[in-house]
Image (cartoon, rainbow, N blue to C red; front, side):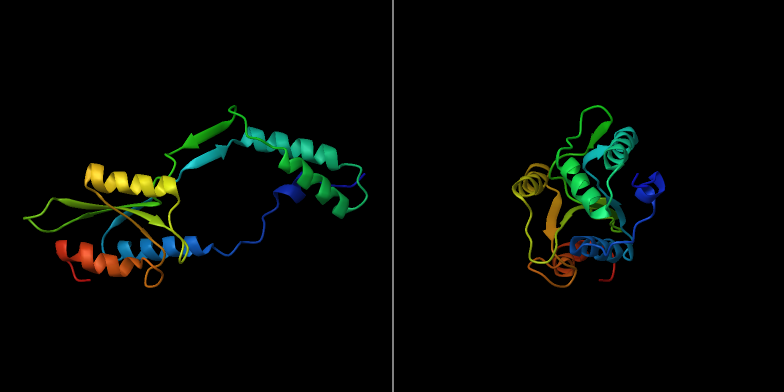
Length: 178
């Protein structure tokens, strides 16, 4: 027997360094929150329920039992993972495909302007651009709903730096210092 235990599969993993996109997202969120914005992270995608994960782990441990080496076990496990397809049972789909990562809302503080300003922000890693679904939804928000919807690939750098957009297109309409 190989001696694999459930604890080995569920033990805390080393923390990963955030993706570059995650750093952009955190930078933009911090920038806006420091200026009084309420920022909400919008999650979307397919989420697998605990029942499916537990069933997979049980089957994986069963398959791996009897292998003499960890290397052989890992190869076998990778082969098993490639065959997994989430089922409708135990999964949940949240959000809309292409919806921006952040929604930011702030009171204007000016009596001559609408009471709130809303920004929809898609964050990308530096020099990346939105995929077609994201571009289409950003355009729909801009033209169809007359909302401020944009993408950014950095707070101060990249092709679409957020701070520059904010100072040119948002701050002049708010009663605040940039």
